[in-house]
Amino acid sequence: MSELASESSNTAPARTVVTGIGVAAPNGLGTAAYWERTCAGVSGIRPVAHFDATRYSSTLAGEVPDFDPADRLPDRLLPQTDHMTRLALVAAEQALADADAGSSDDDPFGRGVVTASSAGGFEFGHRELERFFGQGTQFMGAYMSFAWFYAVNTGQISIRHGLKGPGGVVVTDHAGGLDAIAHARRQVRKGTRLVVSGAVDGSICPWGWVAQCSNGRVSTGSDPAAAYLPFDSRASGYVPAEGGAILILEDADAAAERGAPQVYGEIAGYTATFDPPPGSGRGPTLRRAIDGALADAGLTPAEIDVVFADAAAVPELDLAEAEAIAAVFGERTVPVTAPKTMLGRMYAGAGALDVAAALLAIRDGVIPPTVNVRRDGRYPIDVITAPRHTPVRAALVIARGHGGFNSALVVRATTAN
Amino acid sequence: MSQHNLGLADLRRLLTESAGVSQGVDMDGDIADASFDDLGYDSIALMEIAARITSTYGVPIEDDALAEATTPRLLLELVNGH
Image (cartoon, rainbow over all chains, first blue to last red; front, side, top):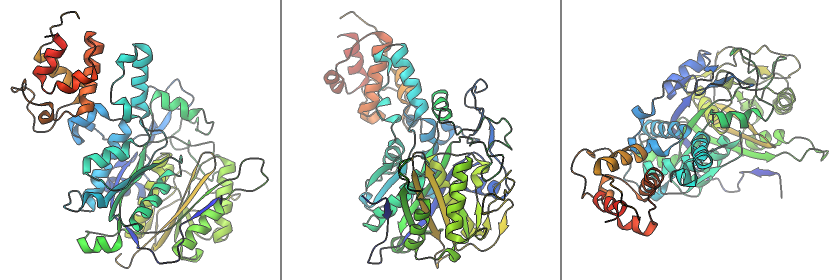
């Protein structure tokens, strides 16, 4: 089987555009708050507030502020949802409202939902398993049957908004947000008019925290301004976060036909690769993912105005990413940014939120900065450490998942932009 | 089966706490003979309620019997052994 999953096709497929964005981010709930603070370099990384993490090896996280679920969701949904599902439902509602597609007389089978997840509803599962093992099997609730599953956000969004078309979930760790959007594009190309996609992820709870910290890549720093420093000589791991973005993907003609209020841009190219196993003697495959995504979009490297990096903040992973970017674009040529330095890494949510940021960069002609990072000559890339006002016509987003997942996705302005 | 004496107020509290209240439904109104469907409780909500009744009051509830208890009054009769 080929390691390359290109999306190329001989016949010109329908164009897939983004018409709505909903955001739940540690520096802002809602697209406007998130984007304003992101362009201003405002960080959302703080000591963990969801539980007492002071006795754990890592104590910082990116948690979504100003979120009272009882204010934002129907009462019936509260007993059956994990925290990250509640965030996803709010982001989905915002995205559909933004696209003016919240209620539709359209055929419900023409509207689908594809999200990504890395851990499902971990905190919900933690609570129920505690009762199961602590009190007895009969103390586990019926909602456990779905509330902790990877597919739960897809299911809840589908039920709440009557989306009866294709549904699915992608589980590829940090690469998931991009892979879900790519799968949503496949569904649009196959004839589904509208697909709700992206990812909201996170498991900042005692059990989830132990699971994340065990991977050895979580920063143990206690200074929020120095704990997550990708492409920096002080890099020592990442800060976990919760949140992400939900996007509304539509067939370009269908969006125009119904009079969608705006088109943020087109999902123009995508490729995923999987790295060979350690010891195979074969190198990493991120470069092939980037090359493939550009080819799929029909763009040359010179036509990409900004790269949103995966930014692992693990030195060997940072170097591999910087070298792949330099191999495609040339050394220190294209601007590279990692706004997730303000947020932490939100697993599947990260790629989806970076796609939202890329589309907003196109809209406003501004590249959001990488914060706290001191540029380091060993990485052959041009890391943007202050907001840059410049026209953005096309952007590349990179996301990598634990165990060898690489995904690259290109968004570009449409003539409507 | 031992006798239990679960009242409407107890059931109302269990429903509200473990499955929430649907918009537009007045749980303080006369709900004894309203269908769970009209009250906004689907089959999984009723399984959740049944699990809570079992764990709180020690009353086992069979799935088939639960499916036939379509109103609060019928569910109370099932639990209380009438």
